Image (cartoon, rainbow, N blue to C red; front, side):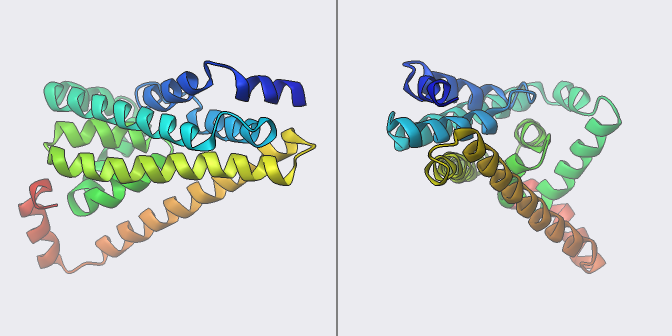
Length: 215
């Protein structure tokens, strides 16, 4: 197993793979970008190369490119993207949830939404479709990309260090840690949503009239 981990980490294409996975999973959600980054982090711990900072930068750059592209597509396509996002019962539920949370907590959703299954794509496309301010979207995306990329790579690296002789166990431990982070982010977002439901009716109507331009 160790030789495969070393091969993964030392491949000349590893940073390209990390960047591409982080970029395209906003459009193709079945791409396991976080799993790939965690695995590369484990490999870096064993092989000592490439530098972990390059893995983090490649992953963050991929997120910025992917989310920016999705925002532009949503902005230019508008209703067409909305119809596509709402296809199916699960798609409609995710889109409605993202739209509702976007009106109240656009920034936290852009940062934390990438941890909720299916929410990264819906958030990026919906932000563009509803006209969420581009500069604000870019700023929150930079923060979210940096946090997500750093957390994923560091979890993998930590697992590789702790289980230096058992890289598969290191990967499993890091993957469990990533799951805990995802669960925590989901609980935080659910907590915000719950507080919104208990807000005073007058305050809620005022927020709705302001729309996303006030966020």
